[in-house]
Amino acid sequence: MTTELGLGLVGCGAFGAYVLDAVAGLPGLRVTAVADADPARAAALAGRHQVTACPDPDTLLRHPGVDIVAVATPPATHAALSIAALRAGRHVFCEKPLATTARDAERVGEEASRAPGTLVVDHVLRYNPLLRAVRRLVSEGLLDAPRRFLFENDAADEDLDADHWFWDPDHSGGIFVEHGVHFFDAARALLGSEPQEVRASAVGRPGGPVDMVVADVVHPGGALASHLHSFTHAHRCERQLMRLDHGFAESRITGWIPTHGVITAWTDEAGARAWERLPLRTAELLHVPGFRPHPDDRVSVTVHRDAGGAAPARGRGVTRSVPHRVDVVVDLGGEERKPYVYTESVRAAMADLVRCAATGGTPVADVRAGVSAVAVAEAATRAVASGHVQQVVTVGAGSRTA
Ligand SMILES: NC(=O)c1ccc[n+]([C@@H]2O[C@H](COP(=O)([O-])OP(=O)(O)OC[C@H]3O[C@@H](n4cnc5c(N)ncnc54)[C@H](O)[C@@H]3O)[C@@H](O)[C@H]2O)c1
View 1 (cartoon, helix red, strand yellow):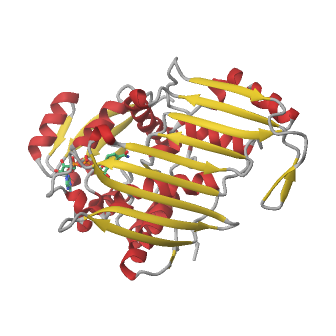
View 2: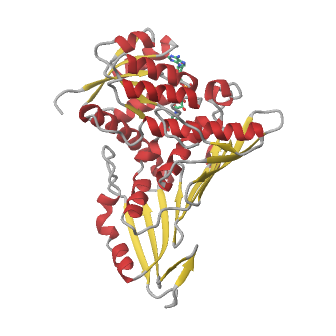
View 3: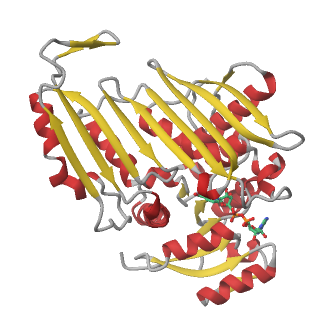
């Protein structure tokens, strides 16, 4: 790469500042300008990074040193800012969610399909090495594609004061939209199909806003994803578990930013030998371009030969000879290393945009991923309000999944 792309950030709050720190020093990128509705915030962040503080987003979009616009404002502003940036000929790094309604997400998709710029949605899970490893193991046939995705998210509300925009659906879109999109998108990637229909429920503390939601999402081919988000915990009591049922195998992944995974698989002799080679392939298995691997990342495998006896095993009409049980641990350092994994995932998402901006390629977390996730979130929100199953419908630049 011969030229550097200039990055301009709109939204200098908590996560905008985090993004700038995460992408500092990324090859091919240089931070040039920031803007915020609150000029004091823009000035403070501009001072820290020695860049221009623009008086408003429009000025930033016209700034000659801005090639990529990072949008890190509250969700309800994402669609309009992304469309304006694309119209100005810029590339866009849009914080999740892409929009707060499926229609607005599609508008962004339509603009992205016309505009020269590339758009990445900051769905950080798409750039997580552990989830990449699971997808690689599925594509290699060591794991079957999951038929079941379950995510239990006991998240913290300790820093979310009653007047935070998070609780106001007009600004955030509600929990399914504001936070659920990460996992609707992850399920779409891991199950390898477009979600079809949604059942959902929501509750809240007495007299308070909705703070706990659950959705069951039907995918084609007999696959089911279940999502729970509960913003009711102290930070120290946060717990998350992602469970994937691959039929003859199971993956249990902890952390909403996945940092530790345990896979248990039943296999034959050829499979056992392939699993045993996995630790030698750690770097390749966990590789995500732009994510700098940690030296303490570990993959360990234990094979228990003949743990299940010689008789064939049958599940969902499939019969296999799988006498051996394999226990695999993929360790990215657990909860203690979450900040590292999180930051590197954001860096890898930006690296994906920088690479695609240069080559014209399609990013991993592309606009279609953003549109699809918002469409599922909107269907889940409708399902709560109506008490009925809702179809996931996206058209235009998204995918048709009615
Ligand atoms: N990808 C992730 O893992 C991740 C994690 C946390 C937050 N986020 C997302 O980042 C976004 C920002 O979240 P946050 O926690 O930093 O919020 P925040 O409230 O801390 O910051 C938002 C900032 O945007 C500014 N702003 C609001 N409207 C604006 C406008 N129209 N033009 C310019 N500036 C405007 C505010 O003044 C504020 O400084 C949200 O969409 C959130 O969902 C993503």
